[in-house]
Image (cartoon, rainbow, N blue to C red; front, side, top):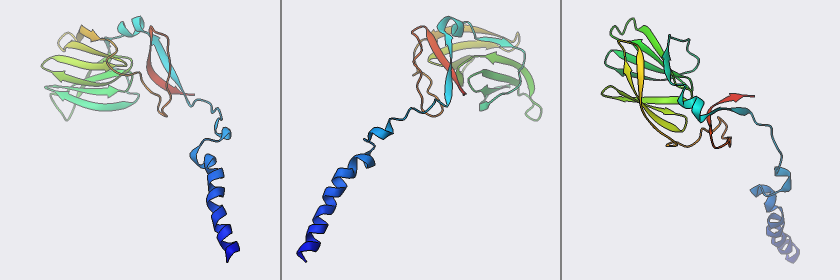
Length: 168
């Protein structure tokens, strides 16, 4: 019986010595895996000059849909926004594409469009009659830097911005 008690007393000690492998503290965990994604980085000057309207483009990766009055905006994630005339919901007409690299969302209040462009918040005024936009204001570094789809971080230079991630 005494021998059995000694055996059971050794079990907690054995678990204590092997605990490092269960908590992830073993040296074998330091394996460098290749990054699955690469950041798309542009200069701040290039990003700030990249907001403009152009003829309608093909959709790449559709995101959120926003309807305001007779217009429908469809997000093309990290590329910009497709604008449609939505006065006839059964047959929306392509109007334009607002190029905004790094953008993922927009909101509209009155006739002002608020867009997150990577780390910045920009405000635009869209004139549907002339198919032009006027940049009103840019708040720099409002949002955190974009993180890769698998949680990877990029550390660009001070005057550079991560606008997207692409698979390797």
